[in-house]
Image 1 (cartoon, rainbow, N blue to C red):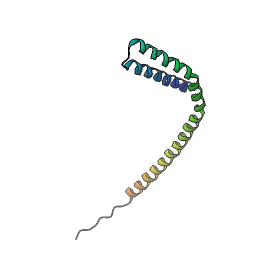
Image 2: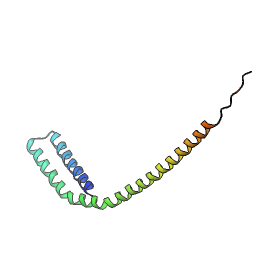
Image 3: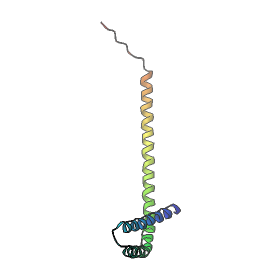
Amino acid sequence: MGKMKNFCKIIGLGAILGAIGGVLMAPKAGKETREEIKKKAQEAIKKYPQVQKAVKKAIPAAKRVVSAVRSEGKKVIKSVKSSAKTVANVAKSELKKPKKVSKKK
C-alpha cells in the first residue's frame, strides 16, 4: 500500500506542477499570474481529500484486477511452456529417425 500512496502523491504533485507551469506560461501580468497560481493552489487543496478518498476506494479493485491478470498470465506461461516442450520432443524424435536417401536415376 505504501507504493500506491507514494504513486498517488507523485501524480498529485505532477498535476499541481503542471497547472502552475500552464499558468506561468500564459501571457498575463505578474499580479494576475500570482492570483491565478493562488487560486489554482487553493482549488487543489480543496480537491485533495476527494481525490485521496477516490484513490483509496479504487485500490481494492485495482488489486483484484492485478491479481486476475497475474493469475491468467501464469496460466498462459504454463501453456506456452507445455507447448514448447511438446514441439521440442517432436523435433527430437524427428531428428532421431533415419533419413531416407533417394536414389537418382
